[in-house]
Image (tube, rainbow, N blue to C red; front, side, top):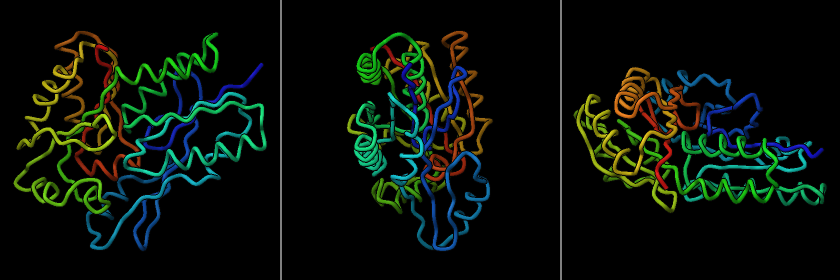
Length: 279
């Protein structure tokens, strides 16, 4: 019997779904003095404290080929889902590792899926991979159905600071300077080409829940799965969870703390929401 494996990069923030192990290739967050490996065990609070007081450069590095190859090992049919290639070399590093693995294991099958997203939306994609992959569907059928499913998911996020995104060229400097002043937060989404697309600015965390609900509805959310991650801001994440359930009933919503990579870009107070929408 062929062994199927499900592999993501660490921006997914999940390691087990429905009893099935999901392997993660870690990204690395660095300053000149510190390096944090986003392996599920890093001290996110320490990283956030350090970066808030750090005056120099900080940056991220995509998983190494070795990290991917270690995750591939032992797999016959391997499903890989990565964060957006528009903002990271992570997908390309997975593709390069795939070629190496196939040279040594020519009978294996590996698909690398560029989700054009990250965080909770990537989590939804890998959950669907597991759901489909643990059925009698063929490798190609699972691959095709997951790619179709990605047309029915969205990512939204609310951030009170864009400092780290600005440092890494993910957003323009004008937008960076406008956010974080006088309590202003930005609500944004992942665009169709996998980039950061600002929607609007709002002042005060109380308005985040209201505006986020409006964006979910406008995108076509009608009570499907929702995954909400937060960067040391469980209070607002739970309020959003309650608001979603009050509006749509007892729907499948999961709230959890963001891991290292999403905390680095989301920064303290950030909220990320992945959801299923009507196709």
